Image 1 (cartoon, one colour):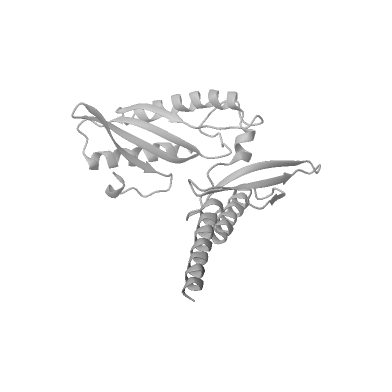
Image 2 (cartoon, helix red, strand yellow):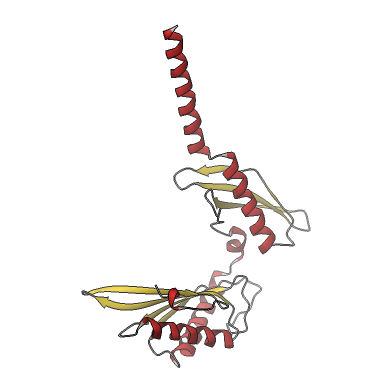
Length: 227
């Protein structure tokens, strides 16, 4: 009798180990379902007119809890194109990359427009905020889009503007006022940006140190936003 109990305990333990190992290697059903829902919402928001079908999850990265889905896009001539999407298996189930968007980017045109956008934005901001050292953008356009960047250009995805600013002896309140001013300057020009990431640079004990402020066009900046 004791042997039967021992064997049963061992069997149950082995089954439990196998189940846990399976979940770790392939993810659990609930997270997979939520990841798929997140991808569906992403596609509906970004490609509302697209005719597509999401195939079941074809892979799971257990080291970073990421599901891979195949999205089959069908164009009006019935030609099908398959794209891979990676979605986090952990709340909020973020879609990591837009492979449809990435496959359509005109890299040469985007590089040229980035140079023009960076030059324009740097000149614009330095008139009122001379501490701005550098500006980087991530302008991405398709081959049919504008070949010259102006503040009126609408890109497939709003750009991110990354700033490096010399902090010097600026207080947090002064940094806040600068960011509000830069936000207004960009908004007044109707520049199509989604986020500004400003890194205030200083030297602390001989090493570079940064304090970051991020803001969107509509955000009401407060002192709590100065990290």
